[in-house]
Length: 248
Image 1 (spheres, rainbow, N blue to C red):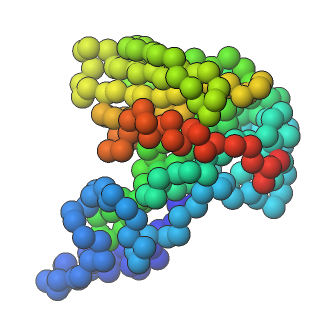
Image 2 (tube, rainbow, N blue to C red; image 1 turned 180 degrees about the vertical axis):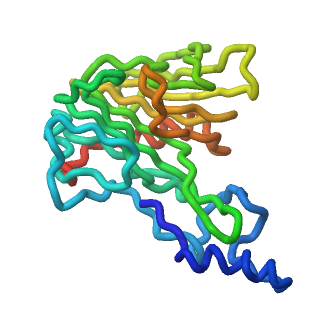
């Protein structure tokens, strides 16, 4: 769950600056610095498993980005959730976007669960926040490497895909790129595989960023470049993914 400092903590450095007083920052480096590992004294505790709400969600629900999910999420989707437990040390749960199997609003594949994992970054005035760097999409419908991936409001092109084994199951490793005319250059990498009736897609970005968006252009999440993004890192994360009955 994304947490921030109290409001007065965010205003204090600005007020001190106006008075000509130098404030000490607990965050080394300029605003926006991406840290290789979390600063335990500064950032909130790392979360691996999604927090479940106390109440149930509606059968025909659709939810924009949220840090908490209904306790009956699995029943709403029609399958148990999958979660990675072997995340890198600097990566933590941030939130999810989901569309239940009864959703009839259009614009998205249903059912669909998009889980986002991020890294802590510093913000101006001693604030901090999460930037999503890894996304896991889950559905029992057909899912392609490019589905709901937008780069600059355009669908990316599939630049490469090769067979790969994911936890002993056949899958593909793929690369997506923006059109040659798009600036800045963008490259998305990912894994696509099936576990029984569920299709899973794990993605990260090596250069640039991509939007997780509906077919009508509505953006639900933004996945940013991650310095550790490569095929081996994704395979390691994917190998740790298993079923999660916590929000079933």
